[in-house]
Image (cartoon, rainbow, N blue to C red; front, top):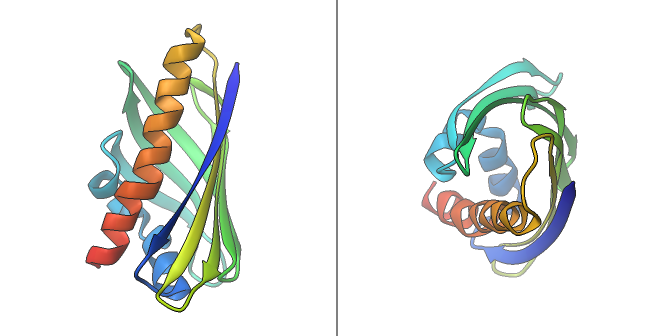
Length: 144
């Protein structure tokens, strides 16, 4: 079973600053309570993270997930699940639009699980991830 959702928010930072914050993968545990650790395993030629391994804990489940990041300049970044013992799918994208005061961001997220889980629980996990990916990320970006 998979669920998806999206949210939009504004940050008082340039697109460059937003992308630098996304690239600071080692700080994931600071901005996401479900992330216990995160490290970049491989980098793209431009120095941005490519493959990331993270320890994640949510709704009583602990997981080690591996995701690949795809960067489209200052327009968007997408992470896609490569490996997980709990998740069957995860695709997230931040799409950036410069504004007069900073950057408008749209976060699209899809998650799926391999373990049996009631739909309302999975939707709660999605809502928590969207909140962390927007409100938590906004706070992190603006504090850098």
